Amino acid sequence: MLEKCPNLTKTIAIQEEPESMFGKIMSISDDLMWDYHTLLTDYTEEEIENFKKNLHPMDAKKSLPTI
Image (cartoon, rainbow, N blue to C red; front, side, top):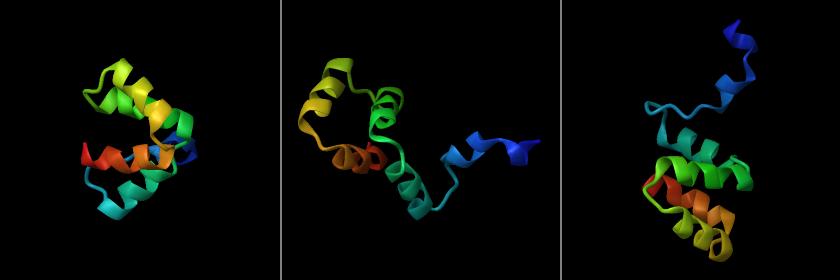
C-alpha cells in the first residue's frame, strides 16, 4: 500500500543528501512555501507577511535550508 501513496514522494527526510533536499525545497509551490516558513522557522506571522511582500519566492525557498 505504501508504494501507492503519492504523499511519500513529497517528504524531505533529514538523512537525505543536501542536493536532494534542496531540489525538493525548490519544487515546493510558491504558495505552500510560506506554510513551510510558518512551521519550520521562528519568524512571526508579521515577519512572514513582510517577506511575502518584499522577497521573491525563489529567494525565500533558498533561505529555508539556512534557517
